[in-house]
Length: 447
Image (cartoon, rainbow, N blue to C red):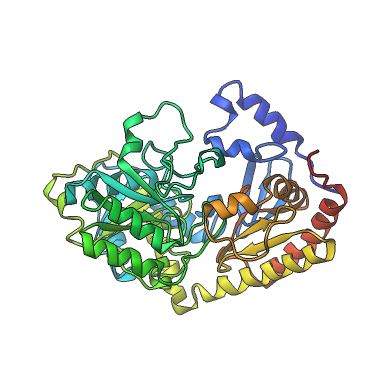
């Protein structure tokens, strides 16, 4: 029988009496039929308040590269908790974590720690402007850089704002932002080096930095096209701009040297989040000595009472050691599992006539649901995705999967943890067989 969610519904109803909107992050309201409440997890599985067990590919929005509740991580946090929760000062742990980052990621010569990647992005923007004396940041449509005023400019420009103009809109999805913030951004198309060059040339001498997700995971799962990273690096070197790689999702999931090692480029600054803390609230900004100079001098202020919190540092040290221990097996092992899962989902879709088209390297991938008549083939950028992806139909299939015990992120992203294996892939496809059959039988497009 498909899962039901009576207890989660009761808890959500209760939460709305004391928590604004009933959730503590707006995106969690997207889960259908109700935002779920969880009690515990173990490796690649988690259990909700109704006792339903899931094979989890959401993994805390990608933070749980090491699976749910790994014993070693729990022990590391518990040991530190007995020594002290917070110093608002220094500890040897911060040296140990920083030194690991230096040894793993070639572009990282110095680091600073934060509590979340949104903070680290804010620090990077401030640092880039202080370093260059320029007002603008260039970012790509569809890329997500935190929920702050700056991070969401041009993230999801609505189709109604699209024109043939070469200067892309700078919309913001939230009310209440400082209006002038949008004037400090230039928005470019992902995987279009020619458009990027035109944008940079049009604002030449005014752009402090170019920021991007090296593999776009917040809108579909879109890898960089051939030559794109080289073009960004070339333009940054030519014009004295900082190249900022936002590895909030990709960091360490792509191996010890992160996506920048996987794709072969060297940024000036890197944002680390999610997997660096394994589920604890921890993030970092790392970069070359030259790029970090204004923080060293104090001309670009970087602060935070809970920065380098020892509990989070203990967690991060354990997490990074797991990646180091895997050596060259990452990300080949997780890529192989993900590609096997993708192939199985494609086979099920073909059996039931469902226009599902997974794409991504494997360690992370997105299940694109093509609209009627949409072209078959890789999605290349944000607008291509919005134009071709049938979000309502994917939402229906995603709910069918959830009710059979398979959990992916609402927008369609799947992540593989270090605790997934062939047995879990087999079980996922067995459960998905029922979900795909139900979806094929029940799905009716809106009139």
